Image 1 (spheres, rainbow, N blue to C red):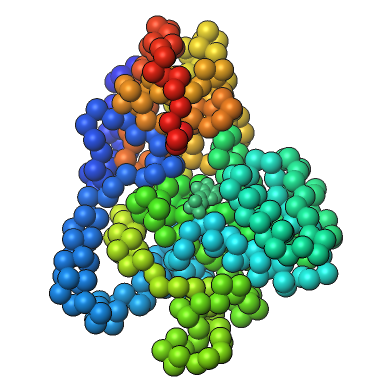
Image 2: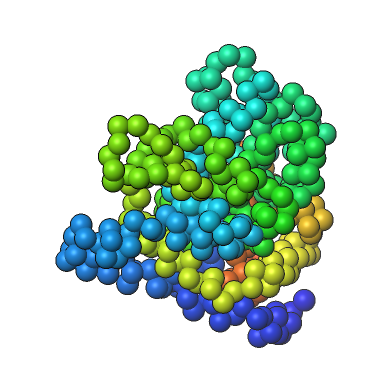
Length: 410
Ligand SMILES: *Cc1c(COP(=O)(O)O)cnc(C)c1O
């Protein structure tokens, strides 16, 4: 594997033109787009327009004149097309955590005789916290049942009301089989809420084709919507009018400007809206999503796999002395779009890497995690990143006090 081979890969890359659409700081190889996607160059102009022209000049009439009021539906539809959702079955709103709370509390009410909520130990702990909070609120014998990720399928038994499953494991990159699990869950009358935080924009998701009924996800990772960008939620058309929104705010009312004293949910997906949308943030996301207009997600998937294989092979070629253990050991179809390695000094090594411009992240207890985002990463980036990883480990340059100190965010 030499540099000529690598540059041939880059020259023949059908996605190479998309890198231009992103602001990428010089000297940085950004392998953390699975945590916070970079800034699309088109976004600052949109924010300036929304702030100066729409808010500044048109003031409140912008709700109609600049279509602010339909942003949650319009942005939801753009995301919906990327995740295989039916028309009018995704809205953009709130955060992933809040959307999970909303769909989980509505879905346990659909099956009141069952009291078990299922999830797995590979789930992002935040999602477990949301489940635990709801269970406390419900009281009445509800429980969370946690199994190992590989045991989810056999754990789908008839006492379970709802399963909360994150499709891609944030640490190992393991990907659940959405079609298989959905089919089995339906056989047993179980609702599944899919968390697509590490799926949307990472590879083609086919909610409708896989029979999925409920999903949530965020837009600041692979969708590049900006820090804390508003999230999305999906409900299959057949279920939409069975959902009783627990946060029954006016944006989900059938006629918010009638100012009726009684809550009456809107028909369809929009009943899942609660309060006024954050227009500036949602506008930024709206423009960020346009990056995907002429992108074939199957090509994204293909390149992601090739970046993965290159990364894994280059690390393996360094030999066992690196002490890096591949964690993403699953077959292609069972992987998300990241590569993770365990190392006993993972934290310090990652800090040293970031100092050298190779930005990935660390996940406790010992995981070095690198996001593979084919729109703006080249094969040469991976090659260079591995050279720097090798240098840091071989020279032990990670072993300095400053690389062992932990910040608030890791
Ligand atoms: C990133 C992520 C979240 C984030 O939720 P927020 O409400 O945006 O903080 C939730 N779940 C999973 C699986 C994630 O990866």
